[in-house]
Length: 379
Length: 233
Image 1 (cartoon, helix red, strand yellow):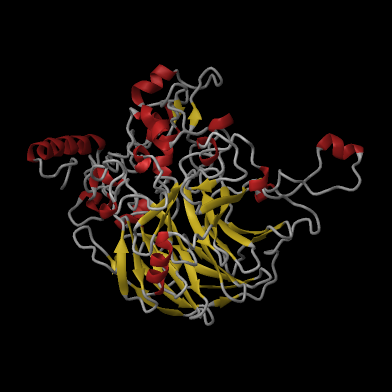
Image 2: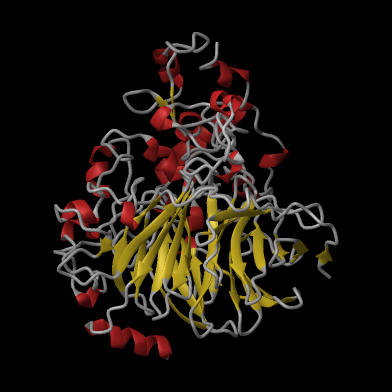
């Protein structure tokens, strides 16, 4: 039985309600002329960062980044006394600076959730309301090393904890409701929720399998896959899978990290296909971590060694690589989590300097590969 | 007992075995933990069989070699061309991660940025942190308990400020005795522990030798006072 907490907590600490606590450090509209990579390469200042560069049609556009949410825009203070001028107005809790975010997700209202492994809580960033909240565990549903985040159809937040090997569920208002799964998880990383089937999938990096729970009952459902060995790693076996994602029909995409590949399972857990290998060419991986699938079935894989994310066809044909090591918009330093929302916005996290970035997938319906990919995604 | 990287190289293995047992005897490691059937996280000289020998892949897990040749971006048949980015320069079709002490081509490989000047040594520790993130890990408990997810370091300066590890020693910091008289001279430290880059930065690999677990926790020196006083007077 899951532990259910009746204790009211400060888990949903709304900071400075009604004021601008932060916001976007930088958005596409603010971009300076000497932008990185895409911009400088065409020797002009396009209004936005896009990949790939012309003459190829653009597929990915950079939208925004979030990093230090306390310092950027302090809340407005109506009356500033002499003391405030000397001491500096207290803006917000310094913990609203991202430190080591890993997992990332967004709900249907566009709120962004990211688990900070160092601060031990989950940031909830609302770009529309310009507010930031946090979700903390409590004694009944603790968080020690939160990693994966996922939101169900009712806006309940689920957070995996790698150290406590458990999943914590928060109510839509931010109350920690329950902690479950500890007996079936060894070291969970990323999680994903199938809203139609009420399933939660957790990638277990230590036990090397996918652990399945029912999101309505919070009960264990089963395991998908088994550990592979150096000598034998057929499809359906895993070596430290760290992240998991779902396509539109519920197929499960697993970043099988130490096997340097992506595996695809059907909703029943049956192996469908695998692609990728160790290497530094397109379509290959060295440290595959975050994974996501867009509305047209393209697979996105973040790689912490390349510090990019690759876009691949559902079969693993490499299509595009976005990013390189660095600190500019569109670059990454220890990229970890990856998520794509219902509007094909792509969210990334970086653990080195604590940042999340948002991109937009741009559909090109007239392109030659479009129909092919769409057909494959529907199969 | 597998020692040395290439276990098929019998000569080398024999040599390494001798080295290992000598070291083990010297360090008094011939304890219960070395008995047959003991857990896998034994002290190990060389990479093979250590927790860093991930999946028996040896060097490849960190030093990924170029996986085959690339001729002008490959062809569609090989599946290795970026279909959406046909104008992508062929030279950039490798993502470039292979790393060594001669990393002078790094900035070119990675496209260049504020973070990757040609002498930027921060890459050394990034390589470690790309696995030690709290989740990605091998099966062994030793690996799993050494994830690096501490708090922001309380020191480290400027652009080299280190994130994390406050409950450990900070890394990615300049080692500068002129700013702290209680530190040994650079030359003294350098004789025992490597400092990296023109500003003598301390990286993970200053104290840890990722290729050699003979002192446990991949320490270059045994975990004792002498190790600390290599730098701290």
